[in-house]
Image (cartoon, rainbow, N blue to C red; front, side):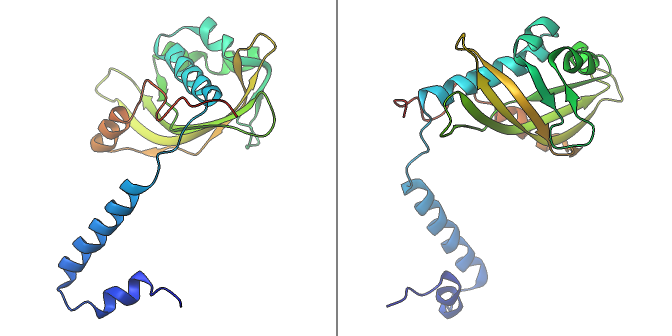
Amino acid sequence: MMRPSLCSVLSRDRRPARSRLFAVAALVAGLSSSLPAAAFSIEECAVWARELSFADSVARHDAAAFAEHLEPGAVFGAGSDARTRGRDAIVERWRRIIEGRQVTIEWYPTRTTVGGVEGIAWSEGPALVITDPGTPQQAYRLGRFRSVWRRGEDGTWRVLFDDGDEARPATPEEVRAFRAGRRDTCPHGPRSAR
C-alpha cells in the first residue's frame, strides 16, 4: 500500500490554510528533530579547525600564516578562466584582501568531508566580502566557498583547490546571521575515524 503524499493529506484537511501551514511546520520540525545529527570524523574536525585558522589568518592580516595554509601548487579560482596558480601568486593576488584596507573576506566552514582517498578533504561554507571596511562606504556581499584540502607528509592540511560563487549584496540582517552562524568548534564531533 502506498503512503499518501503530504499534499494529498493537506488537500483533504478542512482547517484554514494558516492552521494547515502550522501543522506542516510542526510535522517538519518533529521529523528534523528526530533525525540523527551528522557526525564528523576526527579528520573532518581537523579540516574544520584548519579552515577556521585559514580565515583567521586573513582577519589577523598575517600573510605568512595565510601562505602556510596553501599547497605550493594550489589553484584558486579553480572553476574559472581566471585561475591563480601557485602559493606565491595566490598570496600576491590576495595581498590587498589580507591587508584589509580596501576589501577583505570573512568565512567559515559549515561542512567538511573526508572521502575515500586518504589525505584529501572538502570544505564549504559562506563567505562575507567587505568592501571599504571601516569607512562610511562599507558594503557587504555574501557568497559561498568550496575548497579541496590535502594532508601533507607532515600531517598538516593545506588548500589545494579553492573556488566559490559570485557574491551578491547582503542586507544587515544577513550579515548578522552570517556572523552568528560561525562555530569555533567542529559540530557533532568528533567521532572515531573511518
